[in-house]
Image 1 (cartoon, rainbow, N blue to C red):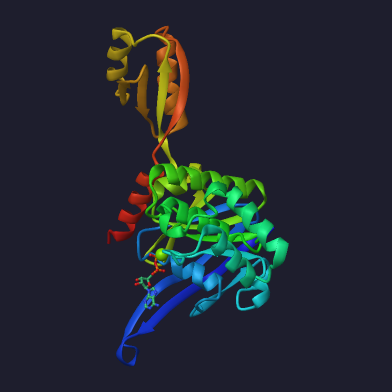
Image 2 (cartoon, helix red, strand yellow):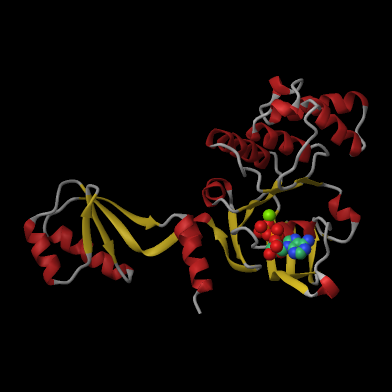
Length: 311
Ligand SMILES: Nc1ncnc2c1ncn2[C@@H]1O[C@H](COP(=O)(O)OP(=O)(O)O)[C@@H](O)[C@H]1O
Ligand SMILES: [Mg+2]
């Protein structure tokens, strides 16, 4: 089941005197998100991430292309019936308690009476804020504010959640707590669409990541797909290398570096990797493991963006 789909979505903002200032925030964005996925849109500030969410929620309209949410065109109110949203840099009045914030948003979604009370209590528990419900939000940390924001986004029991920079400004402990909440929501079958400029956050929680830069989609895939380098292996050895192996390997111009209880080899193909392994075995060297090295998503993200910048 596809929860979210966009088809060649473009958006140009027109502003300034006689519409002289034009910014193309999105260029032909085509992507689809499966139901039950945690899908992240990753990109630097100004990449167009918030614009994409705003179009999906019909808070702004695309210049070209189309998008559907739970099978309905985003212009239809039916598309938003089962959707929750945590906006970027949201704020709640400091004099309200967490409970009051949730009850007022719940009331806006048409929930009332005992249902409203039990729903607010259940959501506070879900985000690990049970003891803080009666405390005014002006006393909350940034992490607690974001967790309350997640609870607010869940108030109408949505199937799809849009979270715009949910961990921005949150300390590492708070981030880990938010990740736990997101994983918990996933086990409840929610689809999560997350915007972030923070690579490390996205890497730890997403099923798939789309990298966006200057309004263009550079790449989409699982974290594994985006981080595989494909040509570097770590070969773990039970004991060390022998001098005889070193001599023969350098004579055969094999590229390897000795490190971490073994060696790291750069190869262009699998047969080349096996040639190194054959040579090790011929020298009676015991192999304990062979692991494909991964670059971090950050390296892959930066290299993609650099490639985009280069002429
Ligand atoms: N309402 C607007 N009017 C004019 N330009 C805008 C507006 N909203 C966003 N932009 C511009 O569109 C681009 C993408 O912005 P945005 O979608 O907020 O990016 P991100 O969320 O990835 O930081 C930026 O260059 C931004 O300045
Ligand atoms: Mg944004």
